[in-house]
Amino acid sequence: MEEISIKQSKTFIMSNTQKNSWTIFGLSNFSYDILDAIESNGDKVKYFVRNQDVDEEIVKRVPQDIEIIDLADFKPSTDKYFIGFMDYRKDDLLNELLKFNLRFDNIIHKGAYVSHYSTIGFGNFIGANATIAPQVTLGDFNFINRNCSVGHHTVIGNRNKTGPGVTICSLCEIEDNNAFGANCTIIPELKIASEVEIGAGAVLTENISESGLYVGIPAKLVQRKA
Image 1 (cartoon, rainbow, N blue to C red):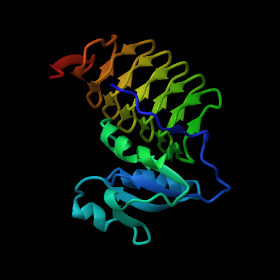
Image 2 (image 1 turned 90 degrees about the vertical axis):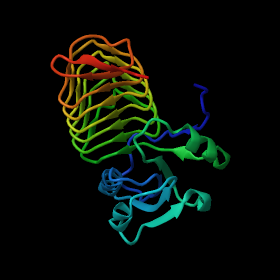
Image 3 (image 1 turned 60 degrees about the horizontal axis):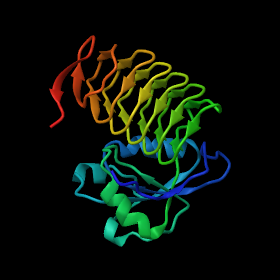
Image 4 (image 1 turned 135 degrees about the vertical axis):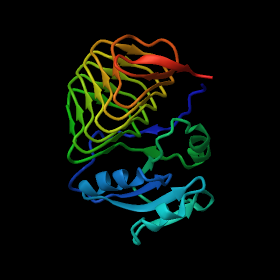
């Protein structure tokens, strides 16, 4: 995949002293986790930008002081920006936004723990009560959901997403575009290729070199990626 050049944020953890306003690209049920994390740091969401059709029930639940606009009407006007949908296929949107030269920051819930010995890229979400242990390397545009744990010396690539309560143990190597179902467990020192999906509650005990869906205890391949 061709690498898309965007500006990296130098902000590691969101400031609790300066009030920032945010524009979030994408609107879904998960947007409320993003909204909660931003507000936990004393910041404010100013805009949600729709880049596709959105269920009207989701739209109705957005607080009235947050404006919803369409992508065609977007103009840079706030301090911070975030790609707020979990699907890893973000290239089309990123290409559209290149002309604005935006910087994508990390959103880290005030209730999360992130070791200062770890390295975090840009555009990542780390939810409430998540733990990022020392010497973790986290790439770009990953979603680490609430109550997740990432063990020490683990390397996670780009555009991965976890459901709530996922445990990734120490010394793992995880590539790109993977999805980890709620409460699944990855035992220590495993390597996981790209475009792998682990089912909810599964326990992964072996390296994965083939893309596809893995479920069960221990997790086994049940569907190869088409």
